[in-house]
Length: 418
Image (cartoon, rainbow, N blue to C red; front, side, top):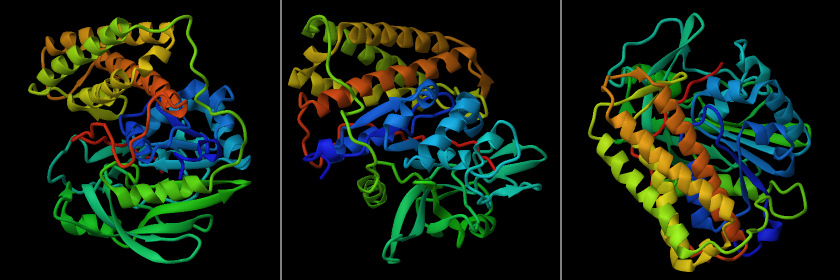
């Protein structure tokens, strides 16, 4: 539907800024598969400088909720309020859901847009069965804990018809919620599967989640908040993806040119220039693969990062560069963009080599790792902005039902809010 009527499709903003992990790249995966190309990638500046107000929809996915709140700050909170009240649709998954739930803690208390409370908050932590570094985080004098990871079962209620459908989606630190007077319940947790990984005692996990709320909707002003505990955007879960596309079909509020802009450049980028960029990405992938064999993990903010996440970003780019090379669409990239991408790809390769040569510890705070992941986010967002612009303008032809992306085997951990 979207592929044939791009001028009628909503403008979608995807937040990739401070505090985010890698799960925002999953939106690129499912948009690729659907042929949806009216996409803009926003950091904290894009939220506050007016770019967000040119969008119909904003997605905020997983990561460090405290980090996202710090990055957006007061101006970002005010921009979100203006956006939704003015008719925008906010879709938050995992950390993006926690972000706008009720909280008394700074800086989360600037985002008190939805009053629902979470079920996975306690003063007395249950002992972990595994992944002790991931299963909880301090929250003042209490703790937010994550009972399970991976696949969970849900009952999804159609907001218009009331019909209920059983679906599955992965949970990687997202909340269970109690209903509140200001929200409409869209989904409830109903069970686990053979692939569910229990981080705490199974009985406590069931008490925390089963029968409680997994997704809600809140109308506010002329707009709406949608909050999802599980990752409905994960590309391996087509039924959950369809829920999101159903929301997008109703989200159009503005008219005008696509948010992705037009192709510009002083002269055509040559195949040699583009292949130089591809070479840097390929070499960075090789170095990143080697580091996965070492016992590295890093704490950035309140989030744990594993080496596998490095390659998620690089594969997101690499798979699409081959498509761009085959189509010849790279000739429509502006020279400053290809120069930035090549130089940043080279710098990232060197950063990974530097980290690989450092002393490995089970968990370490590393300014080098923080810079690396910030650079990976920025380069990937810049590249995807170009990629989706070329698709929108018809330089890359959508092949229905296909996707060319890489899905992480180590999904992100979220830092919650309440």
